[in-house]
Image 1: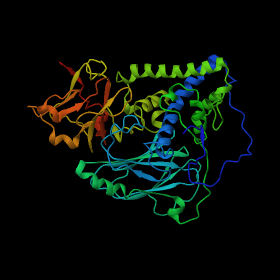
Image 2: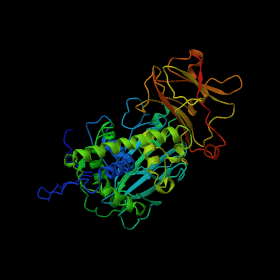
Image 3: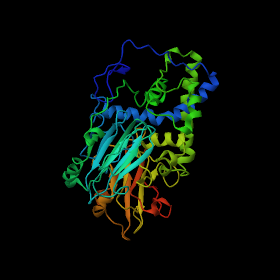
Length: 472
């Protein structure tokens, strides 16, 4: 789609934009010196990247019908009755354990009622994510139990009566939200059972649930997102950020931050006219964006890769993250929509046991679980392979993208009862192939997923075994 602004609405609505409306003057970064502008842009890019990238993904899911990732419209649950493969490219580091269901929630007009069936025999979860990418609530096996129930999802501006039949009210601090459903799959033969569960996930407007008249629909133009590559360098990034900020009432903790951003032309609902920037201003904007990426690279090398912080520190509520914007950006870059640690813990393998980057061309690796030392979980675990730089699942001749706990009965045990996994590009041989996790012919990383982790997985008593480089 070539146009910068599409004549689409977030919800079905006949109201069209008023062609006689007064044009808003372009927002130009004239209140800051070039040096100050560069610094503000660095801060604003770090702050805004998770929002803009999340919008890119949700646009592909719920707006762009020509996109191969399109699921369907807003305010409806869309089920995908399969696990993800290398053909799924919209979202970084997807899991391939649980079929997903997706809900893009537009909460401006009225709340939604989300209903789930009783699911006694398997893990499931609904992860509620706001536009900032905070995980603000959960429904599911761990959080709310295995019984059926209906939950009211309301936006920040809603004030109304909660009808009978609602288990609890879930509040989003942003007008748009994303609900990511995961339903455990035990194997290929189990797919029919997953489909039956997915068919019972229901979403409806509050007015329909309560039998009342619906309020007027809210309408808004949708701007086209940048590509994943373009949003790394294009100043048009800030036009998208300004558009998104109108759906995010300013949090009290960020009042001063928004005032500072406004000096650079970054303000809710205002245009960011790149063409109106002077050459000096444009250079400051581009350099500020580059500064943000340099800061991210340094943070990853010094904090993430060294284990000082992990995914357990990077996903959660606003209160949990404490407005740590670099941590929030890093989490979005490395694995957007990751679960909060109570729901799933994600030990990641970016380096081997000697601190060297993982590479499937030059090296082979093993990951060995000592006897009785498999990941401690209440539900299930997996180890998934991702190729770099895309952070996507990697194609291989046996179509295996992970090894997980449902596969345990087929894994070959060591003489002492332990389990050794073989991480390499070429097959380790038929005798070991059951334990082979194919690596790409190039750089890669791996993510271990511990769903509903036990306390020892979170407090450090159990540690993920290292990837040990072996002889070729």
